[in-house]
Length: 285
Image 1 (cartoon, rainbow, N blue to C red):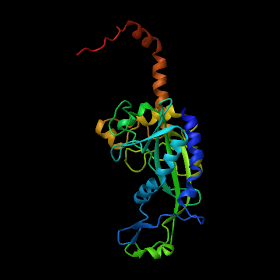
Image 2 (image 1 turned 90 degrees about the horizontal axis):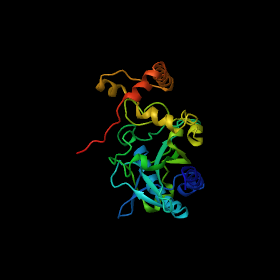
Image 3 (image 1 turned 90 degrees about the vertical axis):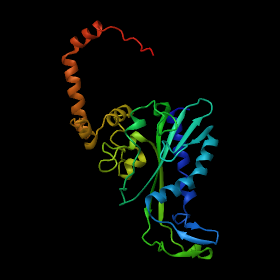
Image 4 (image 1 turned 135 degrees about the vertical axis):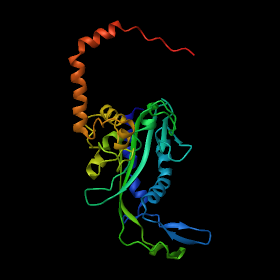
């Protein structure tokens, strides 16, 4: 199984997720938490809580997806490790990274946005095991399983407790789910998630998210990798006491062109230096 085949099968499977997490009216089937005394506490609309509960709700569906496609699921040993799910194809041994991300609609065409992971650490040092289940380089593809939802206006008072027989009257906090699966580079923008964070953000137009039409979609994953592997935030540049090489795709293009122009102007000199340079010897302990 290659990355394209994995994506197509994940997209096909994700098409059924909305029915599994929502009622026929589109409301979330999760109403709250229950204790041993059969008291129900409603769920907060806080995005972190919603995301975690969604992740738990979706896990059985990922298990089903793995079984149907000859894939074994591996989970991270610790929280905040990359990725949320690792699928290993049993026959070929290829690994596929899937992160579960969710965001809410801010209008009919926009969402609040999501973060797609760090652009430092394991993303730059791709042979490192730090904060990742397997080194980044070992994955045949990096994907996001996205969940888009709407917040409900009519929600219960979080301080109020309900009884089990009150379940039909408890309003859902979110509704109208839309699931999508795309390679990360196809939904990534050219800016960090927010402020001076070291996380890659996401495009916010729903059409671009669902259909993978972000700015790197046509440029390709190699350009996406190169852009984010050498991107510096303001604080990173100040710590290194250097000017930021680029802040968007236009300045990135200018930066790359300057480098190419200099190299081309000195092409003969560089070729000569390469011929004269002695072969590097491997270091010995």
